[in-house]
Length: 185
Ligand SMILES: C[S@@+](CC[C@H](N)C(=O)[O-])C[C@H]1O[C@@H](n2cnc3c(N)ncnc32)[C@H](O)[C@@H]1O
Image 1 (cartoon, rainbow, N blue to C red):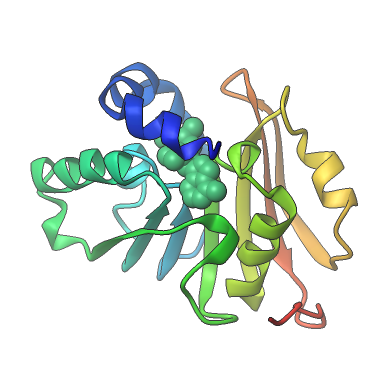
Image 2: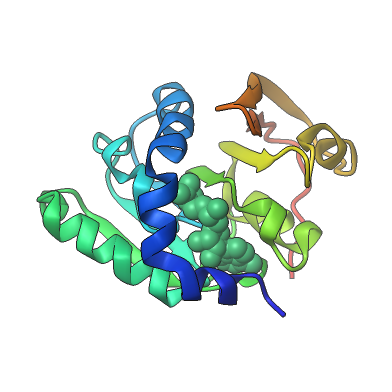
């Protein structure tokens, strides 16, 4: 069963329970990214949107429609209508964007839940521009990021590495090299 079903069932509880800890992760990651288009894969209930205020447009993707419904309420309540935010219900393993379409893609505490982690990460790489930034965090007890990176034949500059971010996540910010061969479908 796809793990997104569990998030659909628990969306309001997730938002209340994890708001503070998830915000810390977004606050650590986002100051290192250039302002501009950002795609957040696994945006969940939009906890990170306040940290993404200076970024525009923001496209949030999630496979759990109920998480996106809570995110929509956040956008309305926080008066973030002035910020250009679009929400898309889609799976990370088949992102509805063209190759090389964004300078920055982020995914915070989501990849350890992907049904097919390899396919999902390939999709993050595919949609990032060749010299674009990929910022990911993962629950380290489930999916340590060092193992993940070692499995990909990628050339990149490491911009930042966080260990035990907010006590539970690994975090990495990578800048891809233009020479990377992106696997095209
Ligand atoms: C732990 S939550 C993190 C949400 C948000 N990034 C945050 O920090 O609050 C993980 C999110 O990833 C989403 N997710 C998990 N697997 C996914 C997949 N294969 N495709 C799209 N979204 C997925 C879940 O629905 C959930 O909203």
